[in-house]
Image 1 (cartoon, rainbow, N blue to C red):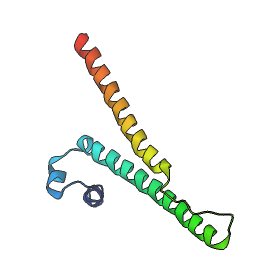
Image 2 (image 1 turned 90 degrees about the vertical axis):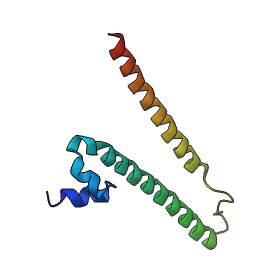
Image 3 (image 1 turned 135 degrees about the horizontal axis):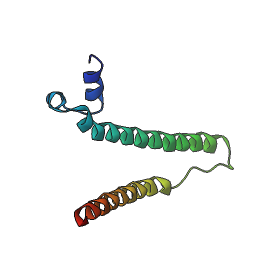
Length: 101
């Protein structure tokens, strides 16, 4: 129990909410934290590419620093939205099947 509260606070659960929630209701917080970590990892990877290109372009004329941001970053935001929409559709279809039965 000693570790549970600090871990819950780390993933964004409010102190007062922690005492009213059960482990099952903490699952969305855990999943959201995981998504947040994935997004941070992607951003750091892209930042590493920028740094690599900055160093490379200062040492070689063959390496060019990009004139605009990588479009891959924009695509990752779109894909997250698409993933979310697909998940909502799956839940809705399950709900429709249950109500039809």
